[in-house]
Image 1: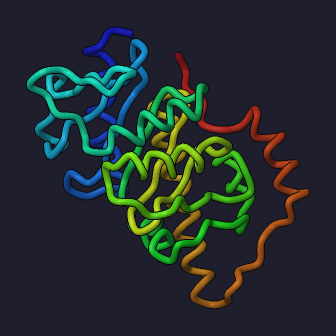
Image 2: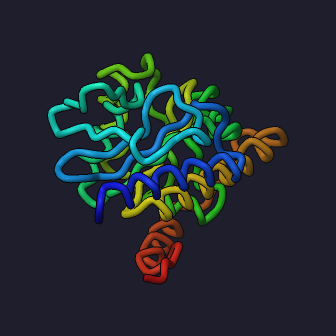
Amino acid sequence: MERDVLAREIIDTCLEMTRLGLNQGTAGNISVRYQGGMLITPTGTPYERLTESNIVFVDADGQFEEGKIPSSEWRFHQAVYQARPDANAVVHNHAVHCTAVSILNRPIPAIHYMIAVGGGNTIPCAPYATFGTKKLSEHVYEAMRDRKATLLQHHGLIACEENLQKALWLAHEVEVLARLYLTTLAIVDPVPVLPDEEIAIVLEKFKSYGLRIEE
């Protein structure tokens, strides 16, 4: 796909993420896999002011275009693509409920069968490290090797999928799960969860389930 088309898709996804209430200000960032590297949102630019020319190409060695500065989180986007060869898009945000669970430093357990959209029986919570650092990208790599989504302790959420539409859909589903978890956690702790055997059944069914995109 042409670069400008992908750049426009990134911008549209950023705006939709805000519309859905999943992000605020310039906190989140979005990327797509491109020519051995990635295209990613720039640092510090409000989504409504983004144009295709603002989107930054970062190559596989972490080098980026002169005169452009990518999101400070580009390292963990790169880590996701390394951990997940099946992923072509990464969405990161500070969605309120996901971030609240991350502050508790808890994974989201199997409170609902939709937990399987993340690829397992939990949405894990990667350990804290300062934003933008190599250490954080290492934590992300470990968390995402067998998941499509992870919380980041005291930080937010990362979701990846085969394209931007599915990645944003996944991020939204995980935010719903986080809200359900916090709601039930206010009543009982630990929250009742589905058994691993049931999640295994759901994971198998989910191989043909999810957001369908007509070409």
